[in-house]
Length: 167
Image (cartoon, rainbow, N blue to C red; front, side, top):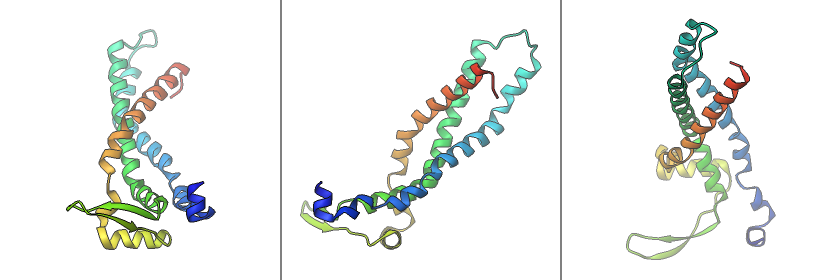
């Protein structure tokens, strides 16, 4: 209720237009994963096709496939995160509190007003003050944070698809 009291009820919707565009993140991730799988995962299917139906896939082959799926899952998440990260930065900047405490290198504490008038104002101020790198601040730590969970998700996805007998 503090946000509503200090900034009004519309403050609850700051950055929502950018958040709606960010739904493309999942689409980018799956396209990247399927592309990587079609390029680098094809050798496993080709090798399995050579085997007779009566032969089973060894544990070593399953582990090898899982490592490939882990890598492709992590890489697809990093690709999607990098593509959509500028949107995340814009959304975060729009949603941050209007007044923030800033500590200078000399240790001086000041209250700084950081209110953006909208998406265009936010983009232009980031571009003007920080350049293109301003849109990617924190991209590497974010990628390192989200890639492992995505990698595991895709290994589980492929394992379930394998058990269900679907390609």
